[in-house]
Amino acid sequence: MDSKQIARQVLHDYGETYAREAGIRLRDTPAPLYQLLVLCVLFAAPIRAETALAAARELFAAGLRTPRAMADSGWQDRVDALGRAHYRRYDESTATALGNGAKLVLERWHGDLRALREQADGDVGRLRELLQEVPRIGPTAADIFCREAQAVWPELRPFFDARARKTASGLGLPRTPEALADLVRPRDLARLADGLVRVGREGPSGAAARYPIAPKPVGGHAGERAGPGPGGNG
Image (cartoon, rainbow, N blue to C red; front, top):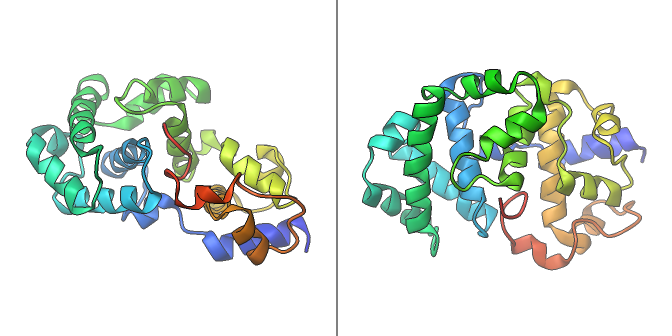
């Protein structure tokens, strides 16, 4: 099985982005871009990816899909939505971070993260810095945002963060973003990046069972399977 075949298999097995799994129909418009930011805030806590995804769906089902709606919501309403998803231990602090973050997005970028994109002016490093001004968004959460947003912001392509590249190496794939980008169509880059992260979360035994050609362990120790979100802590 050559590299392109392995990449196609990863897309087949794990080719759903985290944004899509959270119910976000990602487009280059204000609401879905903000929803992606919310998802990254939820992933920033050391909590299971499945729990963070469920929390995002609960918040969105409660109507908190825009920074204005989030900023205008009650703190207890946000806590309750997180609680319904069993987002425990971090529900109160995350509810605070979401409220403060929504206010910052409204004040700094008028509720539209495309203004953040314009401020970065094509500089990915600067864009990551700006994202990290949002409460709870650290380097890893900023990477998750970029990994997903490359589907609609072409200047981010190809974006494969450290965790995706580590898994790629373990599967015998190229490790550089540019070489990985040669394996799939541009529109599939976000799917491949997320797919590699999902493979890594299964740990070496799961990856070896699904990809017996893997020449070395993938994704660190097996305990990562139930670890924090698709990039670790932000």
